[in-house]
Length: 367
Image (cartoon, rainbow, N blue to C red; front, side):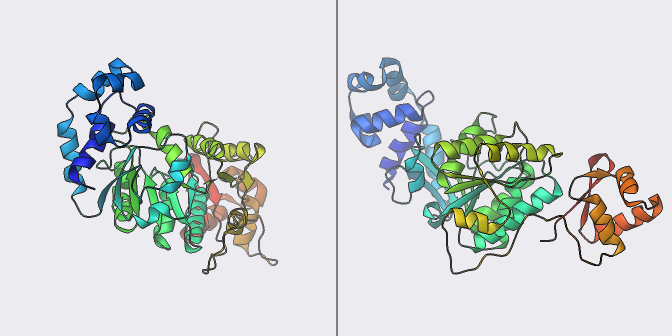
């Protein structure tokens, strides 16, 4: 797109006080932004009101426009508007698609079939492992994995996709030039190199709390369905799931322990009609998805051990899949504290058990 035309899109979207709804009203009334700014003040005021018309025409945002134009000149940096062929067509189906998207990375993923994987920022080790393994298998099956680059389940989902096909998209709640959270900086750079980063927010936008629920509608709207791996009752992931349902997308949830706070959000979704997921095939079947590459057989753990259990198997059976304390293990297993402590150490080193806060332990699936 010519620089002048792109500058008009930026001028429209970077005017404070002129939100998405107002932008769409103007685009519907006058066409492209160049036509809007060529229209008289009174005509614009008749569509959006005199105060908004003054804001639009009198605000000097040339510094912000020039900054965005300079950013777009860099390799693999893109500014996409509603009229661009590369703009995600799935987002055109939601009620409030952004007029302009800042994109870093691959454009081809923007119109691929995607599944969103979201969940707790403080997952259990089992939850993070489930997110990563499900993501890898679904990516190998040909789906693009979409998430929000947050700590916990989001990051695990991105890592799983990168370990497989590499097809993953991160919708961020900051300006595209702000890599947040800082601890996921390296992950963000890898996604930018092998997948795609997307933001609707102006350059330099900080991580304000209100940005993330707004970002969530893009994650759900872009995807054919949303899989919630772990979530508390007040988790932002439930916002994403609700938006997915409102947008006519599928909602999936992995069940967990009735004692785990991170499972209660998923159980609530299942009660409300979300598809209960135990295996990758559950997701693929619901989406009627087929691909030449057979997905890895991944499932949530079943509480069983070998027919002839070893001592370690017996301890794992006593542990179950709920977090438990050392005292509970001693009571269930009938073993002494020194024996159980040694066995737990070996199981942790073997990756079958994880230590949790408060001196608790949790069994980890080896699926």
